Image (cartoon, rainbow, N blue to C red):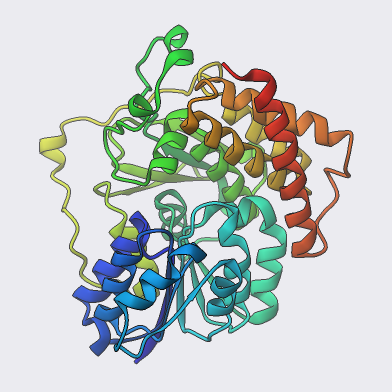
Length: 392
């Protein structure tokens, strides 16, 4: 019986992971070591009972009494706080889903690698902020990292049996988000509700807004560079409104391998869960005749300055990824709070990168996780300062 843990169980990725685990036999097929969640402790308790988890952890310490009450008499241990989540990652598991959104997923992801198992990585910030450290740690611990972002899973699958030396380019597709067809001059006034109206995917609020601003794609561009160790000039982004092709790999003989599938995160999650085999998954099968056509267009960097900033980060490397991500998270917080305009988020990130270039050795490679966390902390301070000067 395989042992599994799910970090970020109550988010959209976590819910899809839970669905697949339960469909595949639940506690009769898997030993659930740990489940972690945020504020929705009622749902976390339901999941923990259904999978008979050994421990359930909420990130919100104030909600620990409610979690304990919900799990009273079940024998499931309860804990709360970031330290408890990290300790949950210290519990050995064969397969770990890392789906905590943001830099909060960094430490548990690293700790999970130490057991030498499989880390299903949905937390893109881990690679963006500490990609070189993460890949080195995985090699040291003889652990396997399996990408769960639909784009990187698609690339991973397209490369099975291929030689990276033959890869000429990697093409990331992007839906363009909820605002992709808006006039450029209207974007500055976009509201949170408008940015959340994604036409294809059902995701958490933060990722959906990042999709509209293309910060999500910018993170994925950096991830691609770090995970696949490919030069930045070989990474392309193309707008594909239908979200049917998840990514493509172009080879030196001119061939392009495209991964197609319905926009359902249970596919990349299921692929990572069952790798290296393929198993039947409860996802829609494509009807190409019904689709009729697939369309593409080049991204406008004036609409999506995040993509330009990602190129700058890839050129700098070092600690710039940690700064980029932290500033993006702070800018997003301000947009959600209504104190920053939609197009001002990129300005906050750019200002933060510029300021820290003069304060720290931005291009120096991180030696430890503490280096990354230190850059993350300072970037959040500077990003908050930048946001304060831009308040609408």
